[in-house]
Image 1 (tube, rainbow, N blue to C red):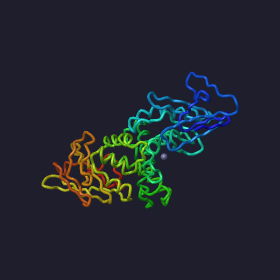
Image 2 (image 1 turned 60 degrees about the horizontal axis):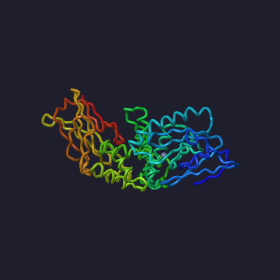
Image 3 (image 1 turned 30 degrees about the vertical axis):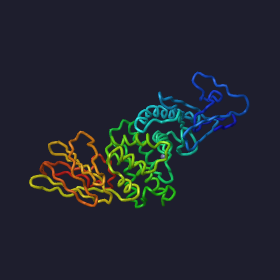
Image 4 (image 1 turned 30 degrees about the horizontal axis):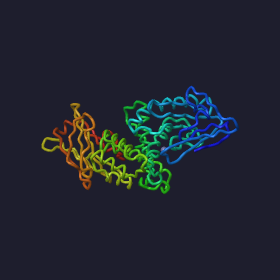
Length: 400
Ligand SMILES: [Zn+2]
């Protein structure tokens, strides 16, 4: 792509600038003095491979900041020369440098030579190898950069499956932001809360709805961004977080540049985890059925405690139940769902007991402990809170 323009304008665009030393403006290699051609115009020559769209922006008042990642991409930060913003742009640049190794390790390396954060009129918009942004919000900038994977590299059909790029980009944004904060706490709470509000509003439509065909922008946005990000967090609950990490990298290896659809993603998740997952896609993507598990009766059964769990919602899930005893010990009980044809691996060091599968048609399920009712201090369904249970009030009880 060649753009010839008045030489007072500085450009930023998709692609790698081929004639940096004729252009200058800070694009020239370190230690090289640019030699712009004489005349009133400059011709900017950009080249890009494996992209499906492009953007360019021009302004006579742009400034540029560069950050080269060792064995990784060169980041450009192109912003208007307004004094008050400079420190924010520097903070953004330093944050991206800090985040990149974690991003590459978790989602796969960014395969292009460079990426540009460009101050432009739009709010935040993703393009291959660049984004146009209005403000320097770090979370939103990470979101846009993560679109390089989920839309850019994958080439998802955003009209048909908006959740595969907005949801996955939101998942990546929240995960990277949480890592940057050094969070030991769950970084996805806001997404779960916004999904729950949508359910209560009764405006929810299936996530499989074409982006242009939702009845309300509210339902489109919350389904695509929040419910779409929960799709991945909750997949981690179903298959285990370690398997989810392997799924994300396998998806990158197998499907980049190839336009995957939801079934392609699920097939990767099935192969990596060894579990059947079509049911998860069918319920979570194609319906608005919700999840609600509740602790029912806790009875004595020949000296042992017998616990009944009820599926009060219409969507079935495998169930983690954490029992805390009065002596301080903890026991994880795991009930796989029969449609999974398998069990997830134990996820932490808490002793785990795997029970027979729960048939999806049954609304109640009981299991017996090796201890007495009086030994139990607390019973909690899904203590990791990755299951999108829309009514958590009935998930936890304390035994008096
Ligand atoms: Zn987005």
